[in-house]
Length: 372
Image (cartoon, rainbow, N blue to C red; front, side):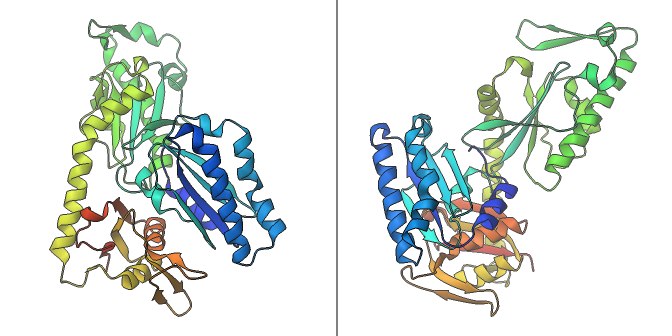
């Protein structure tokens, strides 16, 4: 698992049905991984039974995870794993970071450690364009993966259904490894054809990312950038792009060059978010109170939330009375209210920054900006 979309998060939240288990584990100690994972499953079974589940049901629920011990699940060179189980749901992911070892058994999945994968503002897209291929990648700080673009032509010839396109516009490799472009006397028609091609790509891309705010980087020969920008309707297209022939670039190279461009952008975005929080402090539009923040997130009032990644605040929320109860330690039926606030902020279209405790604006476990 390289990124976490709102749809995946929603599936995890809505997939819980009765008691469920959420397991996070580092996999950097290769030889001990199966033993440690088996121990976590044993603890999960004990906790499920202690919370009222019958022993046969608990074993049945955990059986899919036990089967991971028999295959090559732990041979993958990731830094961690996340496993989510209920009687009707089973999800397992490799993680590109090392999580704190954690087991949570409750009536909902615990997802806060996943927020650093890109549910907040560090998610981005790279659109790699050439005459022969179009590829879309979704990435974050750690990695990137290719995403299928549905309903989009695979190349310019398919877009135009015109086999003689090479007579009008030809590419050849330059000395720098990029691509150069030559024009025939019909070069204006060629540019128009590329624009038509890019409009089809933009339409397919718009269907995929229209509800998102993730920045989009173009990768391609420099001449294509202004043509695509003319076709573009996505408001978060970056001015700078990855120059060169993307057909010769691996996903790893695209990620490396893309992150080099976007790292300052994301740093500024988080700094700007902190500045906004400080600017609105004392106006009634901010809060670091867990009760108030949990209520606001549930009702869709939260625009932006900072939450401490490694901290928990156990308690409960009653949606009928809108009451929030805080407990110093986890009690039966409790949830982590920081996780609760983060999940509902994302599901309601807000932005979450999952950061280290020392980076929190008020030195508190949680800080929020309200929409109203």
